[in-house]
Image (cartoon, rainbow over all chains, first blue to last red; front, top):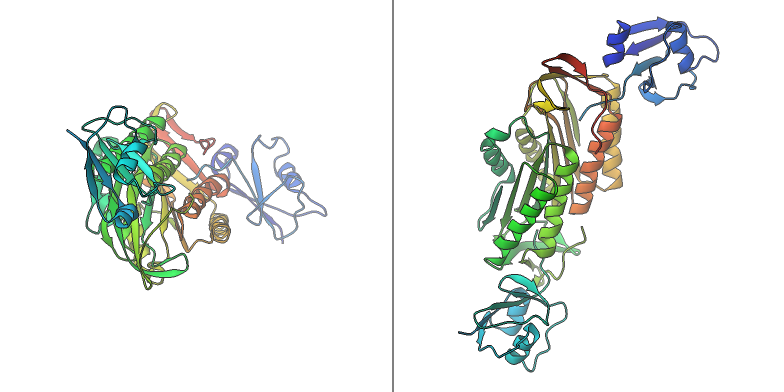
Length: 77
Length: 77
Length: 145
Length: 145
């Protein structure tokens, strides 16, 4: 088991990748998922996060098997 | 020359007529037009009036050649 | 801009199709179309309704509809607007009114479409007479917007 | 209620026609249909735009659209609602989104249609990338509603 991480739109273009995988650690937050994968890159301002397709705050806990997504403000409609 | 008076919808049905003609007198108001034609019948509450197809207050002056209309609240749309 | 009274049933979607076909110069300029269709219900005030007659004040109706639509076009910088309103005898599920507003952005289109409908209901001299089981009755006032 | 994502151009009026053809049980019950169509403009932020790509987050998009529409149906007692949204490559004047709300009365239809659009723009995970003369750029935020 692990956390699947997805990036969308301008964030994916900037990072140069669409997905990552990460082993969850006890008490890991959304913010910690980002830091573990991108230790050199602060989360860009206005970036949104979702856990299992629901909007999530940086402090929300994640666990093995979760799908975590990072993306810029949405611009549909 | 004279004033043409029109009645619409439930008001026309109640009065039993759609039109009247009336000789204008000096300083005649919309309310006076009604009273001249229907001395026994008070203007029903909520009745609207128009002079030359513009909404008019009871005190508005009318003159020869004008078209005056009386009708209930509008219910289109 | 187009404003029409119709004394026979009309199809709002077909009217929109036809109207948009005449908008070649606007293609790509509008980002938002807000549309409202008012339809005759078969039920009103708890009573089944079989039919309806829409009376109007010829001349005054057109004048006020035009002023309402011109006001909306100016107020919200609309690119185009369309109003079609039935008069005469209607049956349940017949369209009564079609309002459409085309604008660069959605806030203007929504607001203008709503404004046109509310103004039309408040000021355009139309009157509804319903045929119910109990007989014929004039609708005394519109429902609030 | 119907919610669809489309990866090819669609005709909003034809979709409405088709959807209404399936509403036999509702005929005569609704008095108000509020419709919004969002269309791709050929100009944005003062620059001509040649094309656009709409990306989305498969799964999350459908989930949020469904929740938004269900919320609207409940909040305004809608009789029916329809949302169609494009994804993929668009050209100027292509429809992006269609929202329709059917209700007994107009206030509910207008409010629900507006709500669905605003919620969709705020929460549904779509992203626009525009192709302009200067190159390709992601749209950073939506215009206010």
